[in-house]
Amino acid sequence: MSRPDYGASYYQNREAWPDFRMEVETILRLARLSPDSRVLEVGCGSGELLSRLERHAGLAAGVDLSTVGLGLARRYKKATVACARAEDLPFQDRSFDAIVGQHLIEHLPNPARALEEWRRVLRPSGTLVLVTPNAAYPDPAHFEDPTHVHIFTPAGLRSSLESEDFRVEQLFTLFPYMGSGRLARAASIRLAPIARRLPGLSGTGRSIVALAAATIVPSHQGLSRTSPTPLSPP
Image 1 (cartoon, rainbow, N blue to C red):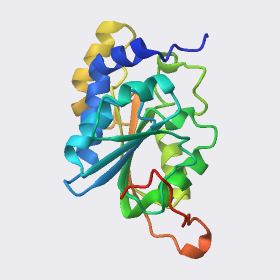
Image 2: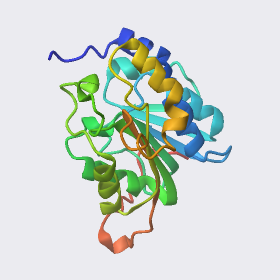
Image 3: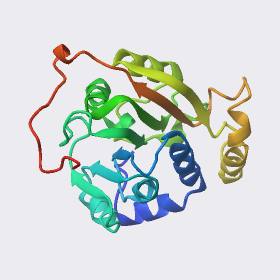
Image 4: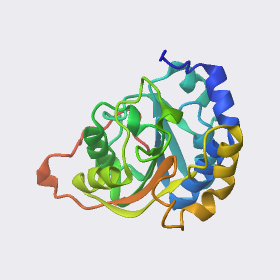
């Protein structure tokens, strides 16, 4: 398979997908934002989710490696965007109340390092919301992508989060398998709110959604970064 085109047209088309919009609404509901919240989106792409985050939080920031995506994200003047790796963030310790990542962690060569870094910049009990493809989905060809490094199962994602000192509060899937084709995909989107409550469908949807809280880690474990950076939130 050839490398997908992550150009401007890809981002614009993606923003119109109904499943993308449902994931955005799910993330916003779980992120527990308030007018005083500071939220970071890792892998912000074109900034569509970031634009929604900034409406619900006091400060919104996004990082990505795509120059095309960041160029589009800068349409949203209230949010801070920066070119940075998700595993090496240009922010001080405990800078954010919430971190969200929509279809990012599957692209990272070292998810454990990324989770460690996200916990570093989260405040104690801060919220992490992730959406990622589900390896248990019956039609994995649906999200084949040569830039995907690791596709998680729900159990595997839970284990990874807990190994990096996150407490998993919710973990479920969206978009149950209804067959292949456009009509089946549309049906899976309509049934998504119901399917997560049905034992036979709740773990095999196309996207995993995880809500986790950062636990308090003693400072002697060496996760602290004390030097300030120009991109640190005020």
